[in-house]
Image (tube, rainbow, N blue to C red; front, top):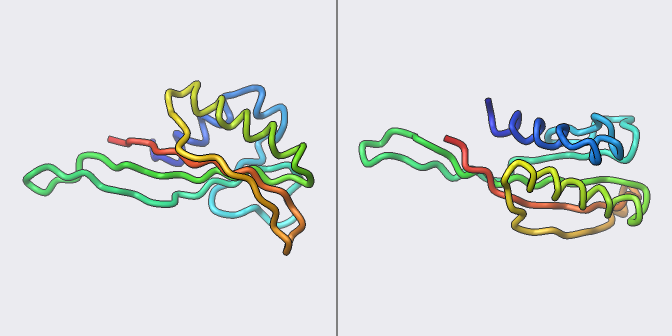
Length: 118
């Protein structure tokens, strides 16, 4: 299972989160004409771990998960549920931030975390 598949399973596995966004959870970009609120996740970085012989044995993957909504009051509870979904799978968040995208007129809550994949 890829890191992206593990993340998707963690996010869709929390009933409180799917009650807010359904299955509107996408990698890389918000699909055109997607209903809101929705979630987008991006693999921000991958740090490989090699054996002394040069074999790849694991990767430390940093994800950024962003909840998009039409208001801050709609986006913040989604961020809370993303945190709960990650914690339920044993992950700890590294950062949480919020923002507004003037071009699309949407509010965002972004959460970063690391996943060690072997």
